[in-house]
Length: 482
Image (tube, rainbow, N blue to C red):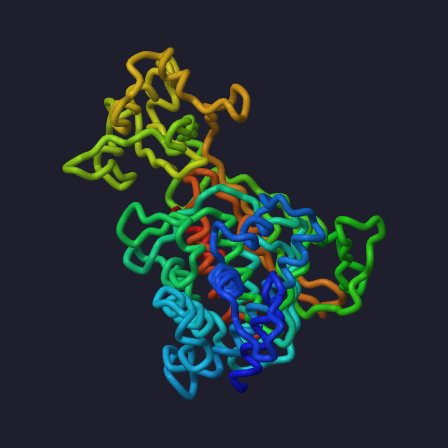
């Protein structure tokens, strides 16, 4: 593509139009900054705000922002093909005037192109399979990327929400800790996007990332893939006898039968899975999980929510050990308070200032002692300036959800009775992944790590067309107590 055409594309795709009367087209600073903000997915940019539902723009205006995003990403993809002949820096210096490109601009463009090169890996061994994925959360989006990379000719994701708005946090673990999640995200180019700044690293081999950030990142990866489509505000409502999926736009009154029958339908629509219900697959609450018998264990977990500091906008400062803040992986979090606490983890990232406590078997059985008093003791281990009495402790609790700022519930594991089932005379294979397959409530934000393993097993099933093997291997993965 010639230099003039590249410059023309940037002009036509910019948010604000040029008022220059000169016949020679120029790129203005504001236009380039908007382009870089878009392609690098800045967390302070309008795309992030519109995608998360926090923008002051109305629906129509945000739709225009999404269209601009698609055009800018398409342009970036086209530019990435130019660097096959020259280096990234040489290509950028050839297409952008020196008098307006700063070193910061060059670095940002280099990172944007590195993201494209990492994320837009061509699919291998193309096959004729089509796949519908119900659910646009992390499990569904990861499955879509895997389906593309395994060569599926058509991949469609339907998500009932309009926005990626969930602010809960995940702990993504790396191969250093025996998991593939963090390494996978890095292989997709997460570190090159400004979106990465919303994540934190609290321990070696661990990335703590908001759910909405992870979802938006994975959706951005899918935007680079030509055989993948995401339909938001689209609700799955069931199957016809022949196996056609019945889908309805959530902003419309009438359900419409999908015009194509899919070879594979993936239920990645969470703990209350509509696909699982439509297939009549039962869900069982387990008493035994691996080598643990939950009925005998009677272990209980408590989630404690603390107010964000109004002046700093941050969570209360943590106590330091040898000039570093207390980490959830420190021994100080284990076997404390006379054995009443087995372990505790913090989710110390605004707007969530939460501590999850897993109580010991003895304390779970004997509730004669006050949970509040035990949590007050725990504060002295964790906080730099802990409350000195119960009144101060209650005052520091987060009241956003009413009076429910200490939530205590028994550990439970809910599991679908089967992971694979056929419909439409055997022409359609339905597969359960993520929380639709199993939901385990014992540790905030770590179940996602098993999803990366299951998605890889799913990819193998696509390549071999052996979903009996998927059911066997995925069951083995989910039987491991995290």
